[in-house]
Length: 227
Image (tube, rainbow, N blue to C red; front, side, top):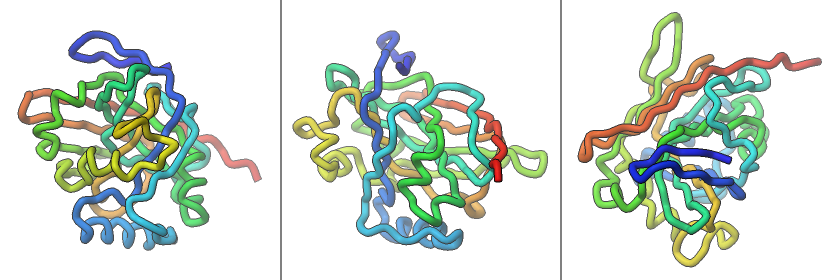
């Protein structure tokens, strides 16, 4: 079970489905940049865009220390849509942490290998839908003894929620929205300076209109890969 603090009080959700929207940029040039970014580390291009990857809902975690196999993984800050047990939509922040070595073999498999850290606070979708594009997404990593900005952009760079929901596979939809107890990671903005691992990943979603933010950070505990 995941628990979130919201403006209306506590929200508890028992996730039954998890999907990750890949190649979800609104600007096709930006999408191509991310495809080339991943191609540089050996990842094959997608069959279509956007593409919805399924992963086990058990990967979702709100822990601040997360065990990962090997040191080849890296995080990606993403807005995350939550459909609660009544089908009401909420917005939080998550990291699509992915094993980049395995990603060169298969994207879906690489996503399934890693935990997906999720923030502990959420906002009602209805409160931000009218200024969605102005929300600011940012992540930071530890590198060479310093904390550096890893990603930075606005949600105007990504497909809007209505478009994503319209393109969802039938197994994830109820009417025009998400199935109850489903989480959907909505895509990411490009990494600054290329995709690379870090033992520490922090992310923020800033709402400049309502003057508030969601944030979450986690430390990667690297597990040895037995040979």
